[in-house]
Length: 225
Image 1 (spheres, rainbow, N blue to C red):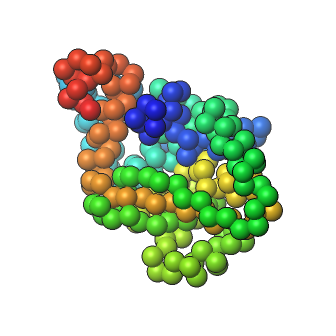
Image 2 (cartoon, rainbow, N blue to C red):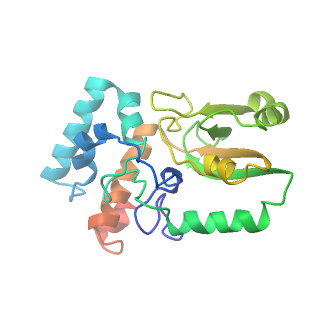
C-alpha cells in the first residue's frame, strides 16, 4: 500500500508470493506469449497500438476469461511483467509470518480478513474464502456466513464467475492456513467491486507502464493515474 499499487517495491504481487520456494515454481509458459503486451514502453503510440492489437487478438481467439486466467494466474519468469510472484519470499511475506507467529500462533480459533477492491459488482463487498483445498474450519465459516460466503478452491484449470483469479497460487489466505496448523483458522477475503474487468485491466496496464517507464509527476503520469 505504500506504493499505492497492487504490487510491492519489487513489482511482486503478494498474493502470488506465498509459495514454497525450495521446490519448483509454477510454470506459466502461456504467459510468455503475452508478456510483450505488458512490457510495452509506450502509454500511447505505435508500440501501445501493437500491444492492444495483440491483446484483442488473444481475447478474440480464446475468450476474455481464458486469457485472464493466464495473465492473472501469476508468473515467475518476468520480473517486469504483470502478476509477478517473485523468486523468493518478499519482505512483506517474511514480516507477515513473523507477526502471525508472535500474535496468533497461541490462538485456538481465529478469523482473518484480506481486504481487496476490483472484482465483482460495483460497490458490493463480496465475501470469499480462497484456499487450495478444504480446510478444517471451512464448515464453521460456511455455517457462520451461509449463502453470503463464496467458497473458492484454486487450481490450474479452475475458472470462477467471481472475477477472482482461480488459477493463481501463492495466496496469503492459504499461507496462513499452512503457517498456523494448530489454529482453527477461517481465512476470508472481502473483494469490493469497482469497474468491469476490461476497465480494471486497462488501468492495471497503465499503472504498470507508469511504474516501469513513466514519470508520476509529468502530464502522462497524472493522466495514467
